[in-house]
Image 1 (cartoon, rainbow, N blue to C red):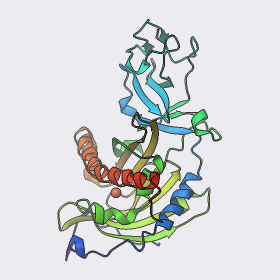
Image 2 (cartoon, protein in one colour; image 1 turned 90 degrees about the vertical axis):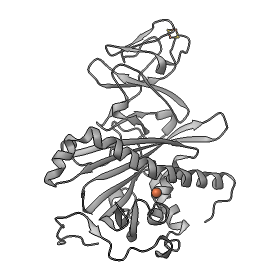
Image 3 (cartoon, rainbow, N blue to C red; image 1 turned 180 degrees about the vertical axis):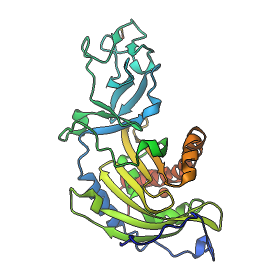
Image 4 (cartoon, rainbow, N blue to C red; image 1 turned 90 degrees about the horizontal axis):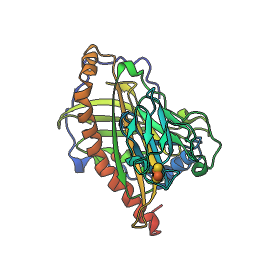
Length: 338
Ligand code: FES
Ligand SMILES: [Fe+2]
């Protein structure tokens, strides 16, 4: 798709001349062929993640408290060391197994609340840290025995707009499904205007490029879509969906308002819950950028904007988790179509 040469409009909003009623829009089910989505999912699953998993929003790992998560059945605790660096490791105390996620952190040292064993992030008393990475937006942990792949020094963090010019918000939610159900939902862009009419309109998938393995940037769904502000007032953009890893889908706005902004969706398997069903955590980072002069002002209002951005993502994910959970239910019962 050639997008060069198109001039960017000064005013980001458009008025839909003839809004199409929800039931009169063009059906997308023929294009959203299960085999196309499945093939895109398989290509994503074949990409390496270096055994890295998103642990959660970086700002949730605070200096004064431990942060606990079960990742693919492994109990992990994280906290900030004395310099503010991210530390992660096994979540059970090496002494008698206390849940370290409930222990306090004092001056960068986690102190077990059962008998006072102190961990400063270095190996001690049989406890050893896990490789951890803070990319400024998300906290990651590397679990080599779970990932089972060739480990890499750093996680595959997608290309983002510079932090200094962006507003960032992170949504988290949990679904009864596996990571592939979350990823398959994101690799079905055709559902956008049908399933989320409150957010999207006039959606057309312009291009489906199934690139060669190892070149994820060339394997993308390119979508023209309008974000709905009111029934007739929309923000038209062109966006590209890529899956740079087996548990990540990135939507990047390539044309229109907010060009360069990304929405990263990361699916982290938590493990099997007591009800015998899997749980998967969605961590979605919206990194909004704009070169409009007014956006500098928006950045100063970021603390106010973040809850709104999270709210918008939460509304979409309420539906998308239902989609992913439904997909898992049908798959686990051997009734998934396609
Ligand atoms: S269980 Fe942690 S110090 Fe005893
Ligand atoms: Fe969706």
